[in-house]
Image (cartoon, rainbow, N blue to C red; front, side, top):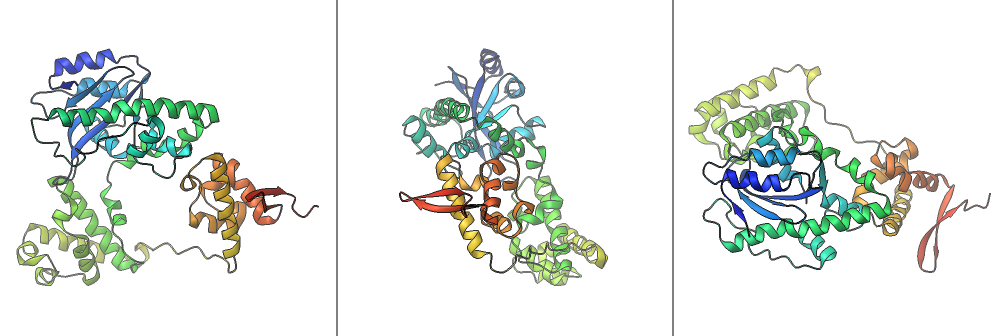
Length: 387
């Protein structure tokens, strides 16, 4: 076990990994009392060596690690990478590259929807992961040998899983499929936390345009305040309180104080003043500029049986190819294909998804193909009418 607590040792370790074809990476962090994740530990493994880097060690400079994350000749392998990449994005100002996410690769290779790390490792390597330290407080020092061993196992097992997934992708010719799925993880917009988009996190059922405008302004204020103070959103104001304010549009501190869970002190303080300003901004928006709730797509009646048939076909294709259904189409996508065919604006009508499923689905919908049961299996029939 190696725990790095000094910059000189980190430089030496990162230099030893220069030019390596890949490294596996994982992080341990805390976020219970902060808006931004607090990085506590970074685990990195090359083909042969592994180390845990104490990000909280006094005086340690993580620049050598960031240089490794930028090395274009070295693939950075994560599992379920989004939270890890968010940390690196906010520390580095950009996303590490190039990237490989074993959870996404597993979906492409037939291990199901969003397979967990423990299950994937068990299926690929037969190893059993000790998760007894899963809920540890990674900010407390010193770290025990058991904690370090647990943390390092996440990247040492991951390199074996990566090797097997990479070979499987090469065998089945799906490397380009994975590449297209990595675009979201590479995009900075995934990690920026735009306050003007914060309202989308709040579950509100088809609010009226004015209420939607209020909710957008209030959520943006809360997001900026949470970022500024580095505290969780709900420490500023809970979702239900935001919803109540949006519906009642208080005009003064007295009205605002009646909001459940808010109280006189907050209503009459600086936060209350900012909330009232947000309300005022939303109320001043002209009617023709208010946000409109997207109207649901009107689907023609009677498509239910067609959708059911296409879902059977999707399941058949996914079982044959070993690709997770979620990666190709969801229920709403299937309904749109049933209604609009090739004109459906869904991912299944593009790229490799179209080649695997979409093209045949359109032909099935139009009667150019059919489904039948042979030897207790569903099969696709070309020209079912014999024309």
